[in-house]
Structure formats: structure tokens, C-alpha cells
Amino acid sequence: MLIKQSSIIGVPIATDAQGQSYRRKALVPSWGRGVDVLLLASFGFDAYGLENSAAAVEARKKSGFDIIYDYTFFCALEPSLRPKWALRHTHLLAPSPSGNLICLGFPRHKDPQAPGPPYASSSEAYVAHLSHPGEEVPYDASGPIKHEPLRAPSKAGLERVAYWQPERTHEVGRGENGVIHDRVSIWRRRN
Image (cartoon, rainbow, N blue to C red; front, side, top):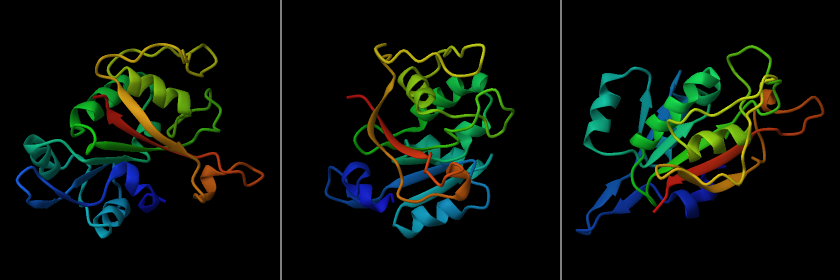
């Protein structure tokens, strides 16, 4: 799935201004067993997993991450914590175009009033939080986000550069009739 998006996120090996080759860095927050870290490393990225790891904190101090891959962190957070999530990811991300935040929108089909984690994570929630990192985003009384599609992004807001439905996904990302509800989005800093 991600390998097909190399025209957007770039290849694992890059060249700096002095013509020196280097491996781009990828971060997987809340990495659990590390399977996705290994996947990104197998593609050639210098991949890091963040699970309160001192090594990941040290790596971040040197420069931003070229790839941050979030597939279960956003949905694990109570909605009130999501502004801080968006702001932190914005700070961790390398400048555009090398810095890419890849998000698996899951579970999009969950009732917003149902308890979590995982909490319902609509595409509109990602847009609202990443377009306005650190800002409070209103949710209505029944749970869904109060999405304002015409609201201009904040100065620090990220830009969604790609959005698609994956060809396949885990069964929890499918509806009762087998329809894939998951979505993948790629975000960058605005120039």
C-alpha cells in the first residue's frame, strides 16, 4: 500500500545538499510489538518506534522525522487529548516535502458515543485537528466532530496531500458487508 505512494512520500534513500546519501527517518508512535517499525525498516527507512523510549527522544532532538506512521495512536486518545497529539506530531515532523505524517483513519465507522479505546476517528476529525494543531476542536453532544470544511487552516496547520481507501485492510476496518471503512491520509507542513 505505502510502496505505491513513493511519488508522494519519497524513497527511503535521499541526497542532501552536499550530494551525500542518507537514509530517511520514519517514526511509528505507540508501536506495540514493532511490526510496522520492521516493515518501514524493510523498505529501507531508518525506522523508530516510540513507546516511551529514551532512544526515540534522543533521535528527535537531532532533527525532525521524515515519516511518522500513526495507525493506532490517534484512535487510542480521548478526543480531548487530540489537540496535543496534533501539535506534537507537527513539531516532530521534518519540513516539507521530506516530512510526511501517514495516518490510518480507523475506526471511521464506529459510533462516536461508543466508549473507547479505540475511539471513533472520522476523516473530519483528522482534518480539523491537523489543520489546527493544538487548538480545541468542538464535538457536538452526540459525539461527532463539528466540522467546518471552509475554515482556513492555522499558520502551523498541516496540509493533506493524499487521501485514499486501501485495497485491503484488517477485518476490524471493514463493515458488516465487507466494505472497507479505513482510509489512509498523508500530511505535510505547509510551505
